[in-house]
Image (cartoon, rainbow, N blue to C red; front, top):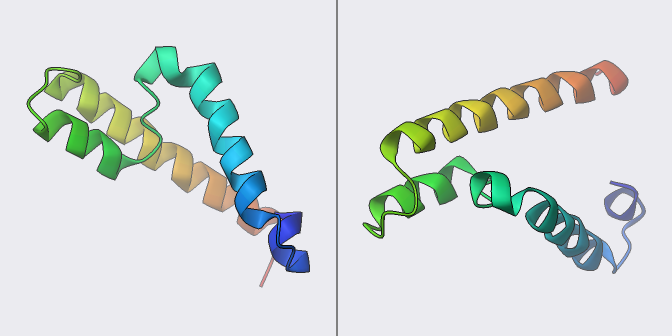
Amino acid sequence: GLNIVTGSVATAWSAAAALMCMIYSLGSVSGAHFNPAVTVAIMLSGRGKCSPADGASYMVAQCLAGTVAGGGWSLFHPS
């Protein structure tokens, strides 16, 4: 977040490093589906990598996590 606030040119590198860490640490748990759109694309690809039941549970968890993160952010950044 600080790279974005300060306008640093390293923003893309820090975002990529954070995503890489998340993929390496949680890739074996959910296949690194961190976005509902990615989960839908994998389910619809027809490769059998994600069952509809798993995909639905991933999407619920992703949306819930996003809502909780937004709520947490709003607690620290009142308007």
